[in-house]
Structures are given as C-alpha cells and as structure tokens.
Length: 202
Image (cartoon, rainbow, N blue to C red):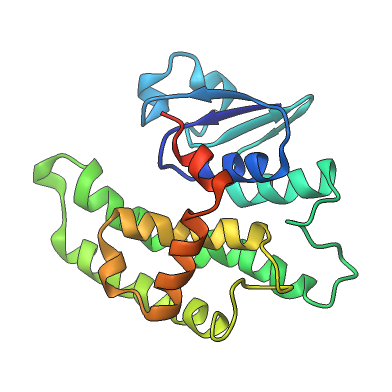
C-alpha cells in the first residue's frame, strides 16, 4: 500500500488509520500543493488533490473513503464497525458528514485566508464560512455529551474523520470558539500515539 501525503492535509485521516491498524505502507510525503510541487503527481491523480492511496489495482482519493476501505478490506479491526452493528448507520453518517458538512467550509476558510495571493483573499468569506463551520459543529458537541467517542463506546474511524475536521479548524485558529465537549474530544484524540506518529510525518 502507498499513500501520497501532505503534512496537515486530509491525507492525515488515512495515515492515522494506517497507524492505528498497524499496517505496513509506503508513505510519499509531498510539498503542498502537490499538483505544482510534485512532478508527475497529476499522472497519478488527475484532480491534483490530496490524498492519493494505492493498494494493488485500487486507487482512491477520498480521505474518509480510504479509512473505510482500510477497515473493510484489511480488517476486521476495532476502529471499524460491521453492517450488523446497531450504530452502523450513525458511523457511516459521521464518516460522510466529516467532509461534506464539516471540512468543506474549512477549505474555503483556508483558501481565502492563506492559499490565495494577498490581493485575492476575502476576509468576509473567511468569517462567513468560519461561522458556518461553527454552526455545523453543534451536532458534534451534542453527540459527545457524556461520551468519549462518537459511536459504539469506542474509538473508530468516525472519530478519525471528524477529529481531523476539528484539528483543521484548530490549525486555522477556530478552536478558541470550540465548546467544552469539542475541546475535550480534540485534546483526547491528539493524545493518541497513532495520531502523534501520523502528525509527525514531515
């Protein structure tokens, strides 16, 4: 298995899952954005996005989908749930919500606060989408009331997927607005040894 990764990017999700599962893999660490800074990357992933994951004849580019693939294909493992589990629907919902609902507004914040040239940055878009993200975090805050993890009373890839969104928000300075449950949750996730290993990759 091979994972193309940029530090701090969504590729942290599958890298974290690989570390939690103790699987062997090859890591290719690239400078962001790889479509400009890693020669030949567009031949591997024509979208130029991060991550790209290759397992034999399988090539994937969606970070949460790769996490699900890993536990389904290379499990069973405690960080995955099987379809017969009572909370399987919630588990899948959090996996998909992590990007479609949570990480999406952060991508706008990142682009218009840091990635665009100074003259193209849009402070109003940054603030509007920051507010949007915080509003969407209400579901996470409520789900964590009295709980350590999102589903099944244990750490799963749902926590990796949603935890990355919280981590990205913190990297953008939004954690000052996090409510107590989200703050506690992110701190506990970042204390995991597998997260520390994954996040230390340059």
